[in-house]
Picture 1 (cartoon, rainbow, N blue to C red):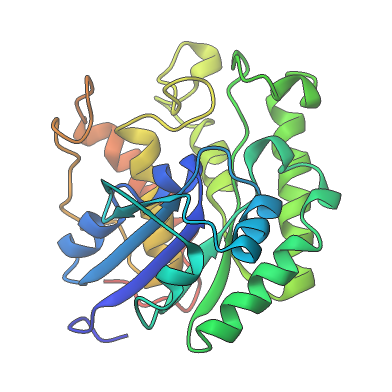
Picture 2: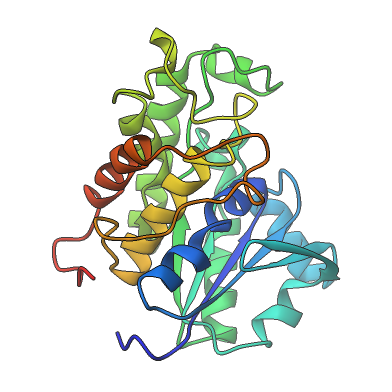
Length: 263
C-alpha cells in the first residue's frame, strides 16, 4: 500500500462507528498515510434500517468527515458515488449485536449492494463491544446486565456473520474487552473506564483504541511509534496520559494481522 496515495474509508454506521472513526484520520496522518474517512451517522442505526434506507434512498445520515461533524444530511447511494472507496465498513446496532437472526438478510443485501456499486472496495464488518457492567442502556437487560454474556453473544454472532459472507472483521469488541483486563483500565476494580456513559467509548482512551485497531486492520499500521496524541479540543474534559496510551497502543498492535506491513 503506497503511502502517497490517499486511502478512502467509508463507514455506514451509527454512534459506534462515530467512536471508531473519530481519530482514524489523525492516527494515519501521523504515520505518513493520507486518508479520507467518512462516517455516515444515524444514532442506533441497525443493519435492517440501513437496508431500508437504501431502498427508500433516505437522506437521513449525517456526513462526518475525518472525525468532524458537518451537519450535512446524505443518503448511502449518494456517498457510494462520491468516491472510488477502498474500504466500506458496517456493523450491527449494539442492542442487536448478540442476536444472529437480526443480521440477516440485511447484512448480505447490504454487502452485495455495496460491492455492486463500488466493486473495487473491500467490505468489512466492525465487531462492536459489550457495555460496562453498570451501563444504564435500556437494551442491557436483554443480556441480563452481564458484560461477559453480551461480549460472548455478540462475538459469536459477528464471527458467524463474517464467515458466512467471507468478510474481514475489525475486532473492536475483542480489543475493548482485552484492554479492560489491563492496568489501568480495570474498571470493575476501580480503574479507568473505556466508556463515557456505559456504552459509548470515552473521548480519549476508548476512541483512541478503536481507531488504532482500525488503523492496524485496514492500513496495516503499527501504533508502536505513532506520535498522535488526542488533544483537549477533541476530547472534552479529558487529558491523555502517555503511559495509558502506551498500554492501548500495545493492545491494538496485538491485533495486527500477521502479514501486515508495520510502519
